[in-house]
Length: 92
Image (cartoon, rainbow, N blue to C red; front, side):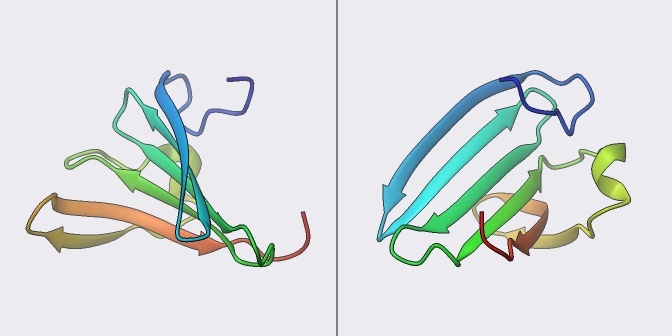
C-alpha cells in the first residue's frame, strides 16, 4: 500500500472505492479488524471526512488512542460499533 499503517504491522486485507449520491467513498479493511473510511463530495471539495471503525471486542490501536476519541454505538444489524469520525478542514 505504501502508506503508514495505523495498526503497526496489521496487513490491509481489502481496499475498495465507490461513488453514490455525489459522494466518493474509499475503504481499507485491516486483518486486525480496523477499517478506515474516507468520504468526500465530488461537487464541493470542502466536504471531506475520515472514519475509523473497530471490530467488536477490538482494543483501540496505540497509534490512534492518543489522537482520537472512540465512541460506542449499538446497532441492531452490526452489534456494538466503536468508531471515531472527523472532518478534514483546509484545501488539499
